Image 1: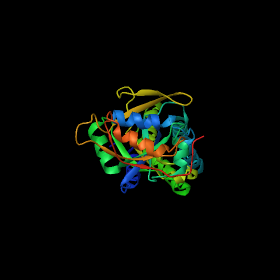
Image 2: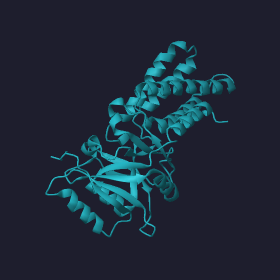
Image 3: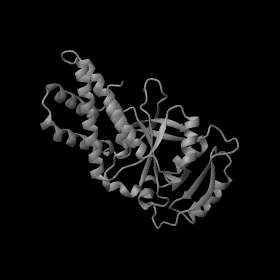
Image 4: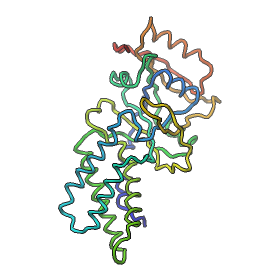
Length: 303
């Protein structure tokens, strides 16, 4: 039996709960460069969780875990348990690159906050993917396994999840400690903690601050990735180089082509939406098929 069996089962059950009822269509908001890259390559990019646009995202779930550990320390009587919890906190808070990658979608087709966040001066696009078809295509064409999960914005629920993570962590550690003869060697404690952190890292990307609830976000979250074996790519970010994985939707444009619903968003220029729709419809170098192509009539304009 795994030394992290309780934690593994708990996180697995939570992930199952948040993937059972995805909406039929999910929307990926992007700018012109992102839209062209996706349609010409037939691929999405999954970003490493420590390099997301909002740097505070992962820190939020870690703060909730810290709060849970601080609340439970008074009931702990053994030195080893205190040491294990301190090591766990140190590991989830360090600057090491996390072995988990995500791609974001919204359940909202025409959300103003998404246009503002993901658009650009060259225009905005919302790409509509059938959720079941997308998951099946990625499972077929991508080596790394990804699961589609709904993000959680309720702070009370998030805090409860983190509390239960800590409780299951302690339960597993006590089982490990009981099976040991004498003091538990530090390397065994370290191995246990690092495996527990890897399990936590698959759930942490779904715990989001309540302020972002309008995003109605769903995420494709990778399994824990062996960074020494998977082909990690690098791209230019706003302030640093960003690691990512490629998720292949379709390897080529052979029939039947993978169809993506497209919403052309707010932009500058004369009658931009209708012009963009015509140009996109005539393009012949796409692997993915844009259909139907609609225009957003949001009053927002990029400046």
